[in-house]
Figure 1 (cartoon, rainbow, N blue to C red):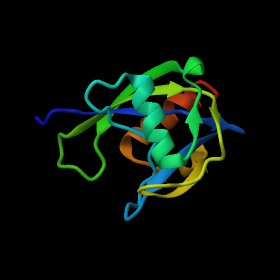
Figure 2 (cartoon, rainbow, N blue to C red; figure 1 turned 30 degrees about the vertical axis):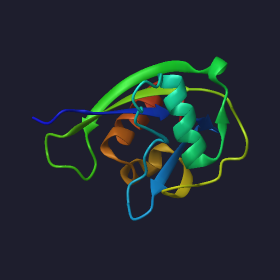
Figure 3 (cartoon, rainbow, N blue to C red; figure 1 turned 135 degrees about the vertical axis):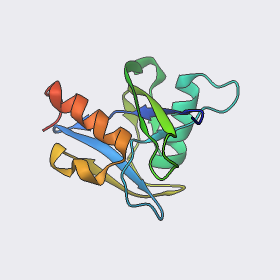
Length: 133
C-alpha cells in the first residue's frame, strides 16, 4: 500500500453550501488547500495555499480544526489514499481563482457526484450535521 497523501483543507460554508475548487484539466471538485512545505505549521501552510489558489488571506487567529477524513486519492492508483485535515477560518479578500484553479463553485449535497472521493466524504459528514443542504 502507498504512503497516504497528507493535505490540509479549508471548509468554507455559506448559505448551506461548501466552497470547492476545480483545477485546470480536472473534472472533479476538491476542497481548497494543499500540502505542507517542510517546516510549515498547518496555519502557515493553509494560509499560503489559500493565498496561492484563491487570492485570499485567512485570519489565523480564527482557524479551528474541524475533522480529518481519508479516502481513495482522485486520479491515483487504487490503494493511494488522501488524508484531509480540515479547518474552518474567517478570511479577508475576494475569492478569486488563481494558480492552477480554473473554477470555484458553491457545492450543495445535490452536487456530491461532481466531487473527489474525499470531497464526497466531507459532504456526507456536513450533511449529517445539518451544515449543508
